Each structure stands twice: as C-alpha cells, then as structure tokens.
Image 1 (cartoon, helix red, strand yellow):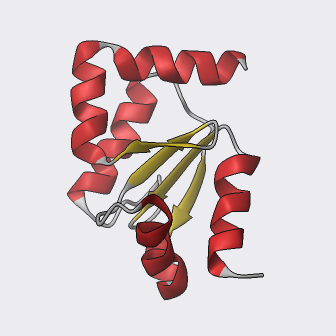
Image 2: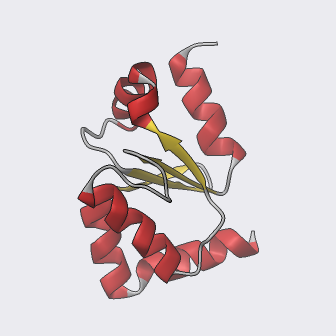
Image 3: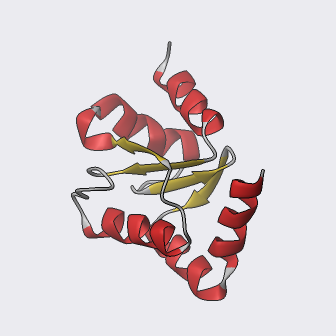
Length: 106
C-alpha cells in the first residue's frame, strides 16, 4: 500500500483525524498542543491521531496529500480542515464547534 493510500484510508476511516507532532497526551510542538486543546474545548475526546515524528513517509506524505506544508493537520469526515491557525480562527468564530458537532452526529 502506498503512503497516499494509507493516508486516504486513515482520513476516510475515522470521523476526526489529527496529524500531529507527538501524541494527544504528549504533544511535541506548541501548534500540535494547541490543536489538541481546541479539539478538547469542542468536546472531542475520542479522535484518531497520527504522530508524524514516528514515520517520515507519513510526515512528508500528509503534506503532499493536503497540499499543505505544515503540521498539525485536521481532517473531519474525510475533509481537510486546516492547521493550528485555521483551527484557532474557526474556533473563535464558533465554526469549529459546529463542524465537530456535525461530525459527532454523523
């Protein structure tokens, strides 16, 4: 299975997926920690996370998959949402909460 196929299966096989540096319990960068905190603030406690530091192919592959150069990356219902900054902006406008609420209901 190619890296792109593996990523596609991960993002489509789970409602909420976060590609991050580290784990939700121990984020390895401030942006990843922010992303986890935003998900928790939206009431999302159960999400699929991928530690890109453990797999260089995934770390590069996810950037190509989304055509987005940075990590973390959030996917909801198979769709790319954005990174830490976009998540923060969406949260401040109340959009992230609505998007994640719909994902939980789906």
